[in-house]
Image (cartoon, rainbow, N blue to C red; front, side, top):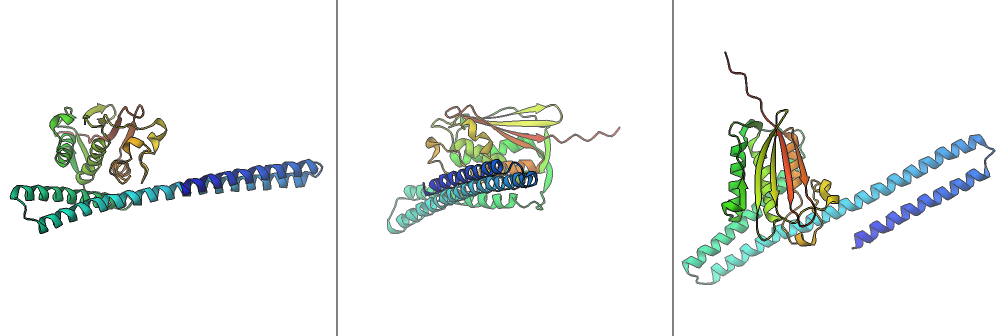
Length: 301
């Protein structure tokens, strides 16, 4: 709230300065119509002042927004790290101080392992976001079959959230379609897309993954969910670092605001593109990953 008030104050302040500069310049011009040389100089000086004020106000607003996003990221990270640690500590203390039946003890172990996986996944996501910013970092390229990549990514997410097969429906992918890329990086990208689809789904999870070969040597992979959806004004922003869609229904959803940023960074490094589409709040979302298909080598005669 305090940062929002600061933003409003500086925006209004910038607008007032611009209006004041315009008033002074107009008055000065009216009083000096006969002095052509001074008039030209005044116009140039006026344009420079206006340009400086506009740039200053624009920079200030962007900086305040960036600080708000970073603060939101820190709050999310604190929650993502503190919650599993507190849970693990509580279960460990319970196991240590109480004589529990073996069945209950195993249940506690499973919960602690799940929390440790969540903690590790959060740390890995932050590290991955840092690695994606390293422009000189080389990828370990190999031939990656899309069908196997999708199947493995879906298997991991199903296992992580204990989902049944019907909750993530996978279409038929041609086993011969191959892309050239880093298998680990691509698994991270599709894992983040599927992870987001699950986290932002409604109570009834209904996710579909399908592919379509396009002319020109491209393949589109669609990840569609029935979740909260994205407002039309926010669709272009969802891939920004630290950005999370403002949505009261999704305020309690776990996340750091890095998942989609990582997805876009990885796909771009592989010469592809990623798009987001949604009809609005309550209508779910569809994310499209477009990758170049590796051409088959000509068979020897």
